[in-house]
Picture 1 (tube, one colour):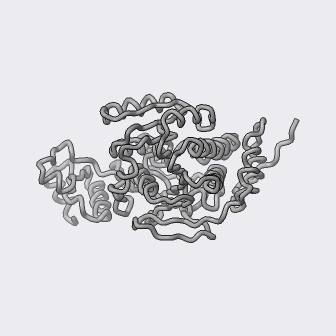
Picture 2: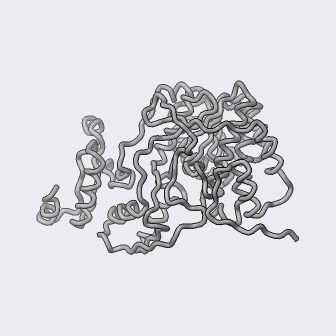
Picture 3: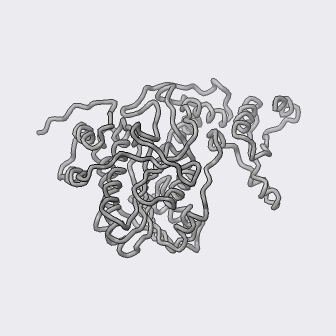
Length: 425
């Protein structure tokens, strides 16, 4: 590799093909960096099996991308267990048009369910998803339902009609800065009340498995989004105490590369304009996974759950956001220093680092080496009796009131900014 720059110059090469797909990710990183310095683009050859089958066409050679630079091998799942869970079943996904929800739909359809119920609030997102699924899976039955996860009447109608065996609840508001100011009440109602109502309908109409998509931001939260997801986890734990049939599981993971509105998408747009790239703090770190990995983790966990568990992924080492930005800048063909980095300061509710476990949680192993079970504290039996009237009151709470009240049920919630309680007229 040390002679790569000399040979590319001598041969006037424009591309370098990495013909060793099984090489460690650090080797891919080194080659990508050398290619940037040499002014050529790095491409990756597919794995050996396609080669031996005569499938290594030029169209299958892809550009090296950010997923290659995560610093760990991709997550794999036990296909047999997942197939046993999904094949021949009716499966429902809420938030089906989102980044995780849509990938769940793609993964689920590969396991030949009887029918997929795609439940989504956004008409455009649903249109885009159904067009794609009809093209990729023309033989599969997909029922697109436009609706709000807080709409109990619609949920009852849908679940009574289709009787889903398993529900993946991915519908949520997730963008921390947007939910932190002006929209805190909507974030809590959507993320907590929506979870409760979908879960309650699942119990009422005989769904066997309910899987909540959660986040590492629910651990010792410092923002409204994280606190709302922790309260949604607790709602699922409370619902589990009300049923001996429906099994409630939660899957908690970190940031997803390439999801809508993600930091990677922001960086890509900024780099395409020539910079600057904005980063909140030089020491901010996050756990990352790809969209397919996140979806496969959800499927794997759902095949293991017995009810009441919170599953977490061993995601390896966290990644400094500034290192991620620099890697992405190199992948775009810029040398170090060509695109300016600007530090803007931590935003309201933003942590320097995320945790996958709270300090009072212990973990248990599972048959999957990358999955563990977090044993969270017991949820008070009166939780739902207290939370539901609060969520269903006929007025809109101020951000300060939401923050104050959230700490009643999520005592580990510690907001970074303390807004002043607004005076009522």
